[in-house]
Length: 640
Ligand code: GCW
Image (cartoon, rainbow, N blue to C red):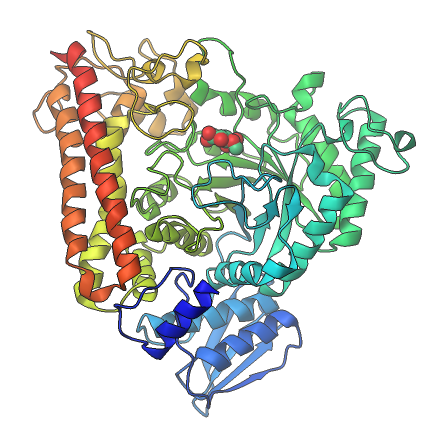
């Protein structure tokens, strides 16, 4: 009701930015046209119908548009737009999803003042998925924007809220996302119980017209909790061993049940033998044996298994955690079924403010892979800091080829009015979709088009705020962990600095001191071949050499790969210690200027969003100072 009233007020006074907006409309703030657009659609599917409706309602360009399916085109989600002899527009696509994406492409061009040129586009990644870390009780692991939009107290958020799910589906469709995983990778076995599957069916029915298929995270030991009719006399099993006949039967029966409810179900996502989750290793079986058993159950239905490479056990001793994925998965290359994809985090550790890319992307030659990016800013100020992730992902794509079948982004979406907590965190959802469609788009262009649609088309707003967004990632790295430092976070909530962190109840691999190794002799983690762990050698040439050699290692990864004396000479002639302090101070100065820039944006932003963003920037400023003072203060005892 509150939302309705607000939007009525806004409609009556459209164009005056002083009226409060809550951010719920995201980047989809188009005003309806006056009518008069003729849209003909020869494809009779709900998805094509949505494409046509969106254009009828919002398109203000040429009066005639026709949409049609064209079986001659490449069979993917792409589309072509051409002009007809009579001056109208023709949209063609192999699939109805393509028609939908073409409609949103046109509307984006319109809203950002771009020309409508003939174009043909195809997505880089066939599957463009969100991963929700949502629990069935409604909480969200690493969620900073309220509770789950899918689950509440062990029941689904259903029909009364399905307009919310429709808004969610539409927002995703507008940026080309075509699938979503509805629950946490730390998966409850209950997810596969029949009552929940029925909810999954209802969610799938809402998302389907928008071209979005649903996937589930599964707990590898589900057969030991959930009973399936006709298997083991309807009782849960006593094992989850993937080579056990009954276990395979259980998964086959369960998968059949899922497809009876959801014929276009996408597949399973699995976190196995990592951070205490069950997996095939519990039975001395390999990841391949575990994944293949699930793959065989789902293959007859055309489904896939996404098997995560984020593996490390607790208390495995003083080994280098960043080497584990490549060490475990490389020997299995070639052993996975065709419908298994290995899902790999962008970096080898864990979504740090900056990491070099994961070398596993270089190691697997015969196994399909997919990147996992984290949209929710677990280690990047959560929903408190303005940090635009476009530049970080662009850096990743400059090292890793995008010739892969799929890509996933860990969502930052919750029940908050504005979906993402921070208004600017919406940009990370947006840029994920845009880069999943085309990773060669520049992060700057995406920032600009997002600002145009979300806030204002005025250059006085766009120029400074594009600069803020584009520099914000490097700024965050500077005030948190410059020069390749990593995991200097407080506690398990991963917010705030704790360089002294050496918690006795934590495994080494969670302790800040274990990562920065600051001492009288210097700072940094030696992963070179010169007395280090040799992690540099998991990379393809020339990076294995580049990273290994302190002279050629890029400064932004320096202390990731090298342990160096405080007096080490940096490229700018300063010592490492001076240079490190300069980064920390620079990060704070940048946030200071964001605060000032934002104060000048008042004429272009409605009152509520202006205030909310301003409050968060003040908070970020205070946090940045804490990071600087705390880290410099701590390192000083060794450096001076
Ligand atoms: O980043 C870490 C998080 C965990 C998460 C895990 C993973 C879902 O701190 O909360 O668990 O990674 O990706 O599996």
